[in-house]
Length: 499
Ligand code: IMP
Figure 1: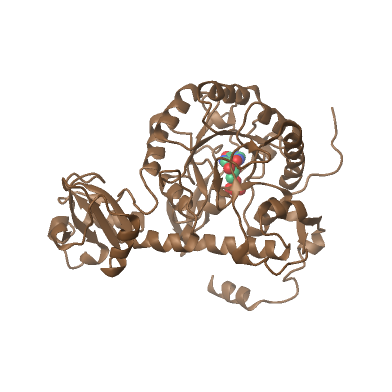
Figure 2 (figure 1 turned 60 degrees about the horizontal axis):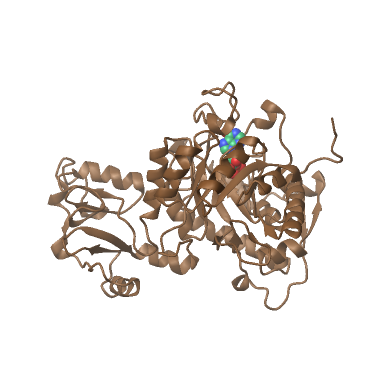
């Protein structure tokens, strides 16, 4: 038995001191880009993202829609692995079909579909327009577009076929398959279009160019794309069926993989990584989760592309209460980062570290990055957005989204929790609701602005500099609870009155 000195601390227990802010240390000059996979310590990572945020390997969080939306903003998603291999591979394929600027159409109907059906479809997807094709797929013959405002169900019968109200292809501006993105965008603006269908010579739909995507590109600037401009996407695997799952995900085009386990310090993870290294040496696979330097070194030595840190801190997690296993996330990070840097000095290999679980606010994100995390995995934060795959629920006029842990009775993710049986003997997570926060694309600019503002105060324009120069200090409970204690704030009073 060994007792570790001191107590472990959470991210929330730290505050940052400002450093001298230089003239060029302004939000526009701050670079939040981060390495995702191992690389020579003096070189560049082969996979980098402009925004150091990735979505959790969870059914309630990472769908193809989330993956596309997050990649558009410069981050990355990991499709979850608690589903049949073929289905996970299909999800990966769906993301890889979309090229930045040229979208594969995924909201399609046949001309015989009813207005009632299309209305449901548009409402469910939160979109204004669907594409009408001969066979109702994104590759069928392009027949027209049907918009939300092309019909009104009080006026038009719900069983009227879409063909009666759609705008037919002949009346629409379309482009040929060889059009460049620049010309397509010019056409969008010159012709005042929201959607430009790109149609092949044989009449089949090739892609859509959307005004929305153009605006997003201007807003976020650096999408996460591969060499062919397809969105980057990650995929979770497990230590049980990796011999089947890995080949299918690689064939589907996954850009990186990650073992999904609540406790990654195991020979099973090592075996999985060694299998991938032997069969697919070009494939990057992260591993985890660990909470100390020993776990990090073990996985780094086994070939992990990155190592995920965090046990017990997740918002839906009950592991600490059920098993007594875990560690405060800040202390876990400090220990692992120390080992990451020592490993880089000794071997010449830099293995990025991902902070996973319990990060709910930008303050916690900034503290994690200052402590040296290369990127951050978020579950709860993304689960509340429009793009997450879970259901919206309204209770007493307040809107939520469902969010459940992979170790909950609902998910029954036995491969992640490895209690020895097919079914979980006891849950390690809960099934709950989180406040609905609207579109990811409206939330992320605020998140980015806050992290950049922290870095400006700390005088750092890159994440590496932020980590090297940050000054952090644990705070007392009294300090943490000081704000707002004595002042009745107008917005709190207004919020209380409204609720
Ligand atoms: P959050 O961002 O605080 O919601 O935490 C998300 C992280 O919690 C995931 O990335 C997983 O590492 C972890 N996690 C997911 N499901 C469970 C569970 O059921 N129990 C414990 N941890 C979980």
